[in-house]
View 1 (cartoon, rainbow, N blue to C red):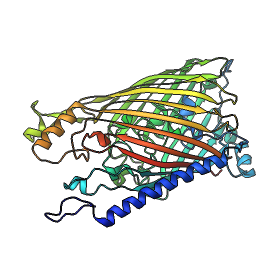
View 2 (view 1 turned 120 degrees about the horizontal axis):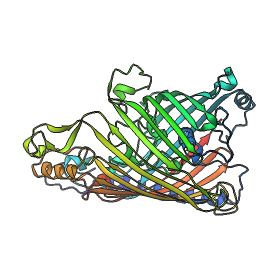
View 3 (view 1 turned 180 degrees about the horizontal axis):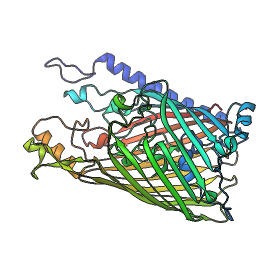
View 4 (view 1 turned 90 degrees about the vertical axis):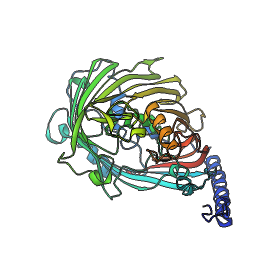
Length: 504
């Protein structure tokens, strides 16, 4: 906090300075504690694999990422359900699963605290910035039903997920509104039970055709990968943030009514498309607080994604890869980010922005395992890709990303994973120029900005420790360059951890 009395400047008050030092020391002590925990666990070899690729919510992207087996039959059947290891050995769960009912329960918790002070200033936008820490998380329940086993309906299954979310995220404390330091923040409605999705799926011809409809999260199937959530940063986990730039593409934990069809013309190639109504305010509490608002009264348009992918596997199947490209069109009118109705800067004329009748988004996403170690799913994997949005209507014109995941490098820790990721976000030129005009005229800027937005980089390094069956603990470090895309904001460094407990 800074002094707001005339003539007293902006020097931090002693109590605030003391609190900042105490917080910094606490974070350093916490970092050493994480290091000590890592050393203590180093020699303990787990009995089974449990990785963040298999948490609740990852099942749709896992199905997209799974090519047909060699010599696959054409028999209509339900694909196997997700079955992660859990801390509770539950005979009831096994009994239910054998009869077609798969019930999962987990908790993911994410902590992040800044070890660098925020930008200081006397303007209203800077006064509230502070150095601090935050915690966010969710508990989730997943229910899959195989109606072929339960009622004799060949190939038909239903899928349902509900979550409860809690806490807040640290990035806003230092002025960033583009990338959450904790991905589990937001979207859950601040309620005990929030419906994420509920849909039915028919799988035909041995997995060569899959048709789904119901309340669906579009970005769980399209532009998706189960590998993304080996990280905590919201710039990467769930999906690279640029793909939901418009708020019209439904990403977990939001959903809309939807229809999707996926075909596999050959074993290692798929193509999928669908139609999803655009519901105004799907990420807002006033419309979708619980997720159970199902009447569609707020539908304002439609989005139609299409995606195709090649899924090769080299070196006798030990080096899988996934190469996908896709795009989508939004039928809903959106405002131009620079021009008014007559082709002049609306920041200058103060007239209404120009309206575009439609907009679009495209993506190219790739991952490839480069080396293989001893265990089945071990090795060094590289991820890279780009999302490019309509530059006339978007905030993020494009997002480029890259990451490395190194699993099982140490023979004594076959299921531990080292990870490094970065995302580069380029703000659309129209947004940048609008900021410059508004700032010159001393008017408020959009997107919570306190300076001109240009570009930003977010990096994360982590080490996921397989503590015991069903428990993963991940110390991590995040670094923000030009938070919120602003050059006038100081870079920010954070320490934290992500924990995942699969209860059943």
